[in-house]
Length: 339
Image (cartoon, rainbow, N blue to C red; front, top):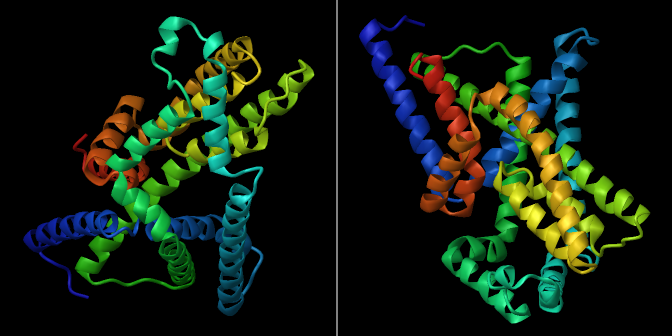
């Protein structure tokens, strides 16, 4: 392979950045974010576990077979986990519509407990809450239709993305790579994107898990010990985990749900829940700064700004993609010494 001149190397780098930017734009524009993230997740898990498995194996064929089996196991586990979550959320106990209807009923029944200054900002009944949700969905009509009518397509994208991620991981962990100049530059862009995804998603999963565990302890252990039994506790814990995968705004969503459900018992329970949640999130603030800040060197206001801008351009997929894409862009700039 010939070594490109300095000027050619510069143009190759610029071309790789432009192609990477176009690819990320098309991913969001064409609704391929689920495929991209599922592929990166499988690739990251195989890259994480394969070296530990490979230490005990001798011979290239044994290593290839081990990585292939590991990839199959990871994909199978993720598919079963996704199926299990879908089945739970479709059940009567975990149905999201049941949770939303319960929140509406609680708000309607609890207006007498709420101070007048606060009641002015709360829907007067279930129909008012439904209207608020309808107005929000109308502003995100395209995403709402996509989540409903194209659910099968999204699941297919996830499965295909997982398979591509597994195949890529198998190739990268068992072969010695040799690239032409542009391919080498594009590979560096992919490596940087993978690193950003791994840092953000693994860190956010850790934070969401800790948040869900603490919330579960409060809802399932502490409140029952105090003689308070709230409805839909398991659903709230599961929702807390999933919305917690979104930095910052995830906590706001889960906190709102828990406080509203707390009103089903009493205003004091709702206020106690709010106080508890504020306390654990203050403790988590330092954890978030350590985990997220350490991995991607991004402050909360930076992530919020990126999410706001991406939401205005791409809607819901933009909110989901923003932390990873922002971390990727910042990593590229930091590697060049520009920020």
